Amino acid sequence: SKRMNAAIDRHRGLTRDLDQLTNGAFSSEVKNSFSAARKAGLDEIDWRVPHLIYSKDPKFNEGLDPRFAFEVQQRKLTDGRVLEAELASEAEANWQKSHTTPFPEAQVWSQPGVAFVESVPNYRNEEDVWSKRLDLRTLDEAMRGDVSKPMPRPAVFAEDYENYREGRYVKDDCPIS
Image 1 (cartoon, rainbow, N blue to C red):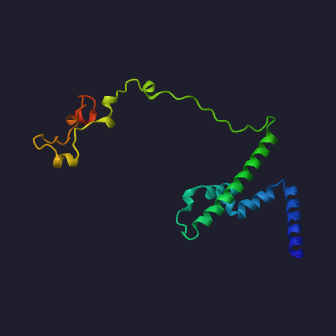
Image 2: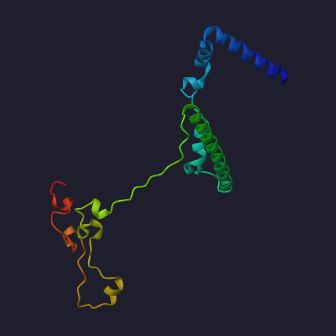
Image 3: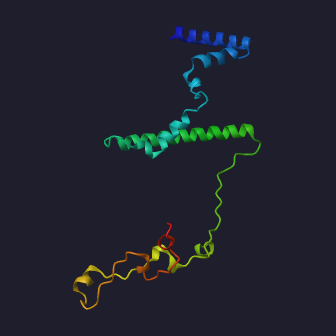
């Protein structure tokens, strides 16, 4: 182990010396030639971020064995919280280094909403597609009710609804659509 550490230190020292002699060209050339991550454009990625996404996003919990699912999800949640706190503190430290103003706290501004009737002035409740009314009777009324009173006709066309007004439903009135 001591020999290995000594060899690693010696290699790092020689590489540093070569970098100084070549103005950093040696390291970048070695990375360009031998690094699969550099060739794929992945050498600058902080791999904690995809791990955080994997830990926090529930879509990655699919396919877990139900016997272990709860324990695995709890561990992933714990890992996600630790990574999130670590990345947040690192981001705050980087902000403090590059900006003179303090790190802003999360701020949420909510504006009061506008009433629906005010936002859609042409809306009329009686013309609403969802408020189409049919005159129907319950099955019990149909079976035991007054036989002299006829059953309502089934609504096949838009004209069959009580509150139908011509020109309102384009797909019913337009021969092209």
